[in-house]
Length: 291
Figure (cartoon, one colour):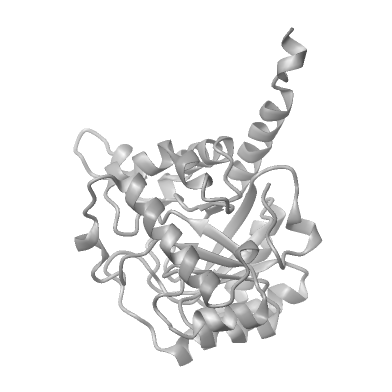
């Protein structure tokens, strides 16, 4: 597993793919909007995810579902900071899911460890400088624009090759901005400016992205392409809460492809899946054992 600077020892190298549990402190997230909007509900949910086997918690106060508008910075801070503070006090390793440097810095001050920016530092010009100055691990997702316009940008000749090139370009820009490359984790951005066919191709060829030399975080959990795959004879996609078994299957695929972490809404099955993959990999015969 590639080194990630700034991670606490408890999650630095567990010998398997990590599981990141999602805590949406929002009224409008596609999978569970509103359920965890109250700080006390979000904190209780975070604790439940930890009990189910989450290695990290990803706390966000702004929905990035397709078509979503922006929330103002004061509201994002109001949603996120109390939850980060409370869960950090419980010993949780926390990632803050934000595109704003101001929110990221407040969350780091409140006890977060990782900054997860779905724009990869493009939405806020101050983000790369903040990450360089604080030395925090930084999740850089493949991004082509905000949620209200991203579906129109799902145009590729070769999605795997183009995502690879665009991530490599972001990696170069961020290193030039002073971020140590060992801080950076890459995310192919499943569901963000991607059709279902694009998402399946990326899942099938994660190894092409792994050769960029940085750990990969994969976020397939409950996304539209899973709902469409599982649609009944009427063609209606199954709702997000019925996509968790399929999510666990994508977790196994990602872990078997060497992903550093998966980001999921329901943790228990994915926590089991990454351990099954790790045990299977460990049991494979080495070449000298098969002679």
